Image (cartoon, rainbow, N blue to C red; front, top):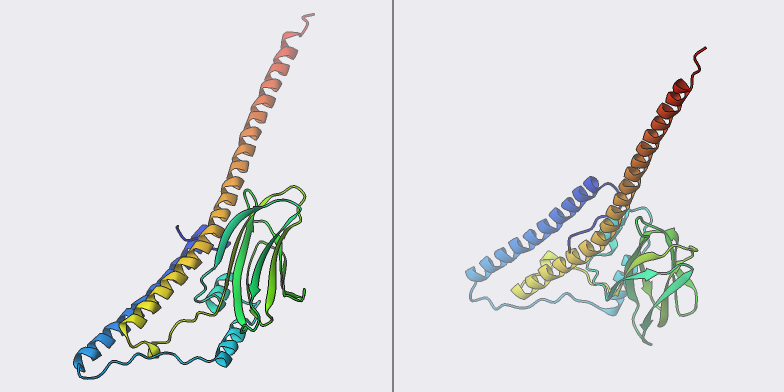
Length: 274
């Protein structure tokens, strides 16, 4: 599906989207260049035995990485926050559904006992029939404590470290009396970070890195395209209302003018000659 961009005018959104795509394309080009250099070095050193290198990891390091990625950052915009905290994000759930007025929608994520701390990430976006509209979103841990909350927001990203095993609840609420909303919700867990250039040795590792980058671009583009489509519908709705108002105003003006001509003509025709 075509990419979708955040709030703002279409021209500015397309410019930012182009810059993002250029950055991602440059990353892919850099990976391909590194792969070409590796192939050249392998051709010059045919006698050297190729050894696969794996990035060392331990439970402590994984917990530290998850905690670092789960730190909140409210100063950045949506795109900057996505680039900083949502790298490598692959949603296990990506759903668009109608949220009726005065109703709540619940989603659940359960962590098994004796599980390591895991990073849970995702985002949501809400819109009405022709424009963006806010909802209330909250996340509660197995003990019932609120770990994340947003009130009267049309969109948002969340990322936190789930350290307690049990059932985590994600609640989307629409407290409007008459307005139904369309909500897009994405959810995934894990901290899948990209391999560094010094870790890439074999062709298989290069291919995996390129595949992960392309999946990241596809996921981000899908999410942003849904947002951009809603904004375009809002602009089209405003344009239709303005055009209808102009037509009604023109018809009223013609009617008043015709009435004035008829009234003045009647006065002149009923004039008595003394």
